[in-house]
Image 1 (cartoon, helix red, strand yellow):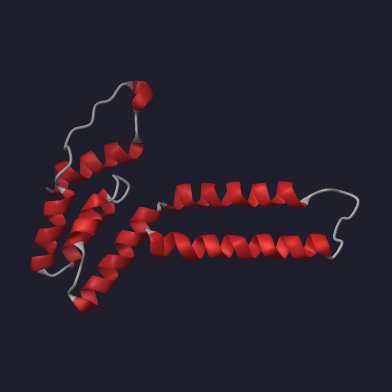
Image 2 (cartoon, helix red, strand yellow):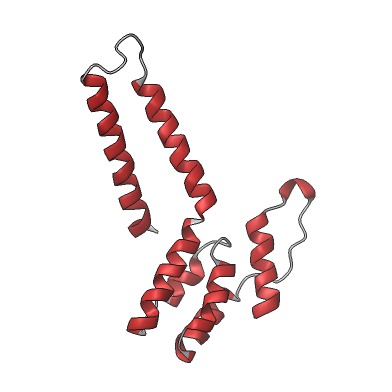
Length: 136
């Protein structure tokens, strides 16, 4: 996850520096817009990450790399949250049999049922439980 978040954060800092340069250059001098714009870009980046499912992206990148190198840290992938479980189990079929067994063993540890109270519903946990029921 750190390999994904570090360049994203660096890109956001780059945007902040560009905004700061525009502020120093005198863009919209009549208004104080810099702090508000930085906050809006930060919240926008967080919302994009929320919808992009970064853990699924990490799983896809690692599985793609494992198809060529035949090496995979299945223990790490198994420790990811329930956001990654459906993608991990679906991608297990693309791996060599030895890696597939490691991935399934790590991803199938969690619960196969999900029945919370209505106010405690979590879509990721429900999808992960469904994927475990179907593929484990």
